[in-house]
Amino acid sequence: MKIQIINGPNLNLLSIREPDIYGVATFEDYLKELRIKFSDTEIHYYQSNVEGEIINRIHQTGFSFDGIVLNAGAYTHTSVAIHDAIKSVETPVVEVHISNVYAREQFRRQSLLAAACKGVIAGFGMDSYRLAIEALKQLKVS
Ligand code: DQA
Image (tube, rainbow, N blue to C red; front, side, top):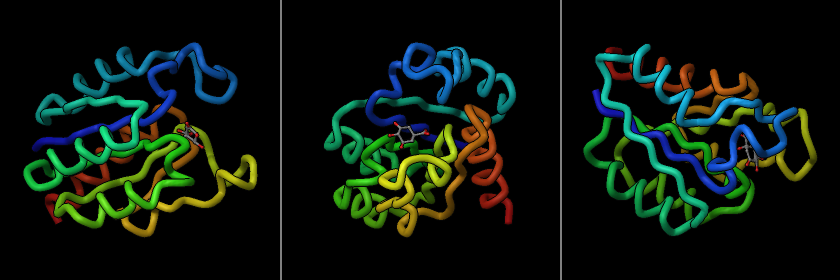
């Protein structure tokens, strides 16, 4: 099984950025744990701060991978173009957030992506990514 994780803007600064909200772990360290846990799964990782590059990655993996785990960061709340990219591909996309966006500022409570995604997982810290992979694996067998 092949899974693509895509992290959007500012998520390259995990461990440094607002650690009270996003935690103290780097994504690279967490990724090592994920790859050990899902040793039967190819987990590809991509991070970009650029909207168009995120769209390109969705296009590149959205016809051949089994699932995409997408944390689009702030683009979640603004990007019609990423919504359209998700709708344009065949691979199921799970929207994830480290924080519970519904318990934060009003502007984070709207996702322009959720309606195009298979589902949404938010608020479980880094564990949101593991839960998304579990969900994609379950989809594959069901
Ligand atoms: C986030 C939530 C977004 O509102 C924010 O802009 C982020 C991170 C999260 O993972 O909790 O960059 O997607």
